[in-house]
Length: 508
Image 1 (cartoon, rainbow, N blue to C red):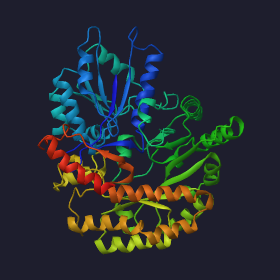
Image 2 (image 1 turned 120 degrees about the vertical axis):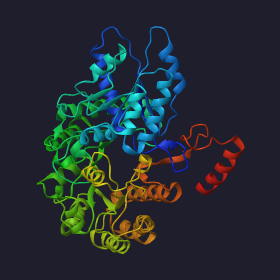
Image 3 (image 1 turned 120 degrees about the horizontal axis):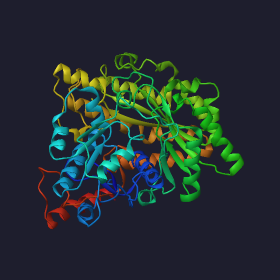
Image 4 (image 1 turned 30 degrees about the vertical axis):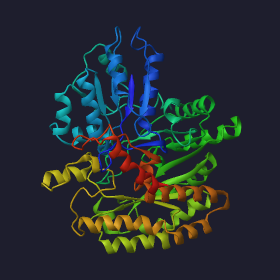
């Protein structure tokens, strides 16, 4: 079993890989937990399973080893490309096709495949290419069907397409995500892991893929399951920092009970974990939620504010956001000594280069979050925006490798591509200016001063030195000259050194 989280290509065609990563993949943890559960329960009978967990953002994929394993007598290798997002699909497809040429069974799942098959009646060309090569695509969540897919792989009868979108699993008693030491040791914080406590979202944002890929009905893991997974990770692997990857933890029906259980673990068992989570703007109004989250160990919240322009919010269906309460929300979280990072989208319908600059200044002066993450608006497959643009015949970028929220991928009614990119880059520069960072450090609680400063260092490093979004990069970029995107020439050793030496000098 090879559970592989593919990376993506950079603009020069090199696979993005780092010496150490920052955010481990929750998709890998989910599939690792499910695979361990299948093995522990003996659901494949007398089959010995060996599972390898590989995150390509920090590890090289051993393609030759996988092919040899599939040829060994009495053995079968299966490669599962998990959690493939749209910007990773091009790389995932190249890996899958390479393995299929060696006869290795391959499954590809994740948001891109699920989004395309959920919103369109036919099969898109990029997925058809995989099917024609004998790759199996899995659309939807597999908690209740994973043992069936693995049995099909072992018996050599994988189906071309598994459509599971109409039968989402009940997560209440499903096997919980399980961090792999094989993977986490390659990250800066080896004591850091992810877990999704719930899936789905009740809101209707047109740019979001969650509502069509995971549904609008909130499905959630039992508090007992979540705390058991945390307790195991803490005791077995020393993991004490978690990222709850729920799109909106505040709307998880079990969130209050989970927080209560974490508080009890802290007081009764001495397991004092810390965590960050994603919430909506109105979450601060839930009675007792902020205080309880702080007591349970929450040190940071990611809040999807998206825009300070109410017309933008109305156009994308984000009716739950009211710009007048942004500042109050930040202050209440800050009073509880929880850092606030806001998500902000550049390129919504009413944005112009000038208005974006004005709104970012308002974000700095009026809202005063501790951190901000800026994203370029993109029509992600699986979103209503993507479906609408395709139906209306608007020319969107056919290169899915660019769908990483850092590239322009569609026309904008009020900005040229150059203006849009300039507004995006200026937003990063202005927010993380020395002036604003000093102002933020001057008002944060002294107990989190150094944490905020470290995050500033990291964000400035990622944006300035790496030229990439901080959530999508890592420490010290590695470039393998022999693994390059089709269409780009493979460089000789001397030519590659001539490229890399100046790059490393600039980085240092």
